Image (cartoon, rainbow, N blue to C red; front, side, top):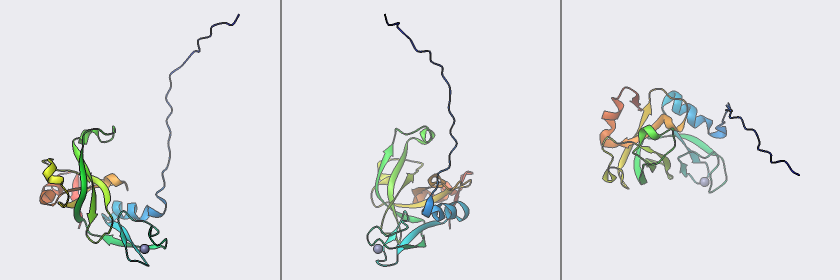
Length: 164
Ligand SMILES: [Zn+2]
């Protein structure tokens, strides 16, 4: 006769420390953190400007060169976020969108904050400008975009500052 065995279980917690490398894109995050620069890359063959940067041109497969990109651009597409991870719950509702910065041929996915978040503020074609965290860690969350007409208000908040 087989004995009915109920396994004994103990609850515990595993903490994992790890490093995440940005590899060839490290320069983007270092310049963002240290100098509030937004770096893209330019293809040495076709001239396409990639933002976010790509180390090799995805059209020509040749190496690209780092170039500084302006902090202003337009919204290509956006949406308002109501459901998110624990890291961003304090910010809801907020917007995310693909922003095409001036001089870039591609768009970067980033948060868009507004003091009056209504769809008309974040629609396609609206101008936005980058605002930076005063305390930066070399992460995508070191900056976000705001409607251009709200820029002065955002950079006067204690935790944020403007770029150049
Ligand atoms: Zn190319």
